[in-house]
Figure 1: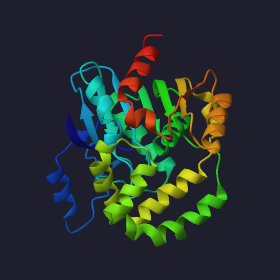
Figure 2: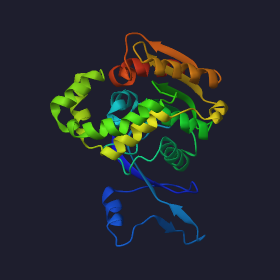
Figure 3: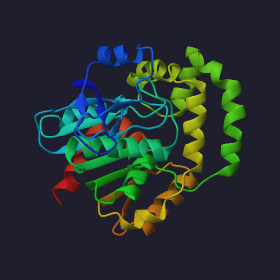
Figure 4: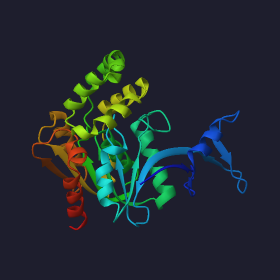
Length: 296
């Protein structure tokens, strides 16, 4: 497993893998390095640093997994470990999360950042992409902007029906309660309510504490405001939608909305599971489902 950062260019020219010390040296210069001049063409390239975890670097077929909001790359760690002998696995750290390179701006901007990375690194196409909750929304946005970016897409527990009332409550509620997340007793209560397996608590506690209040409010607001774009109808990927049997009504309705709009979309209800449990708690089942889809 490798932890990398990349620089991609605005015009999709090749990316560079660079060390963190190199990036820090740039950032410590007297003037901010937002653009670099290309000597041959006098064009400018937009510097975009994306941090990600990488497994199976010697394999040809690439899969990209987008973790849930408030979590991090470890959401898909077990899947990556099980797949790394056959596939090249990339798990980006989403904007505004622990270890990310920049603040969370929007679902749309995070989607464009990943598209730029895929263009620069893999010629614009990968075998499969998967996403949970916020990561699932970002994946849907990616498919809306680039219909053929992957052959297969796994959408887990993604909300696409906006909730204006919930969105209005996020800033005051989380703004007031933000300080509690650093207390272990509160984090343990929150962790249990998420139904995540106990062995992931230290990962959860460490990374939740590292999220800035502004970022947490921003991505939670985006999560409750996201709606499918009309261009998602043009998606050519083989799309599979997963929800837990114990999901909220909004998630269940969202799954049906995605299925209706995307041609050939398939919804699968996971018996006995809560929100996000499939990829977080049942990596073996998740990988087996992927293999079933790939071998179909």
